[in-house]
Image (tube, rainbow, N blue to C red):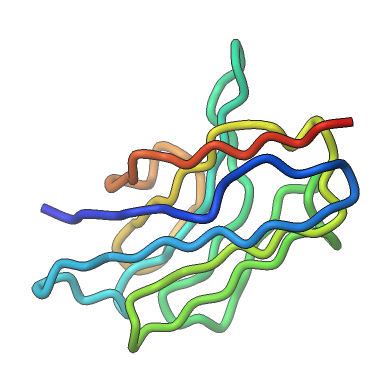
Length: 125
């Protein structure tokens, strides 16, 4: 079983920044073999892809809506993945989820088999 724990959410004004963190604390979880992703779900909407970092760390993927504003990064030694969110907008308000999938392949939501419990991000106008 893979456990993922997110943190760093909160309330921020539009134009502000937040940094989300996700840690995989399990000793048997080989973090470096997993593509890590961030997804979000706003009230009444489906969960959507935000960003992902390939298992090798060499490739990153972003949704068009966050390109240029969000940055995903990972620290395999600490088993952590981060999402730096800048120039936040009210439409970024959602519960943000960390997710993991073994090695490579598509970064669609259905491909990720492991999920965290989510952290709330609220952006006020």
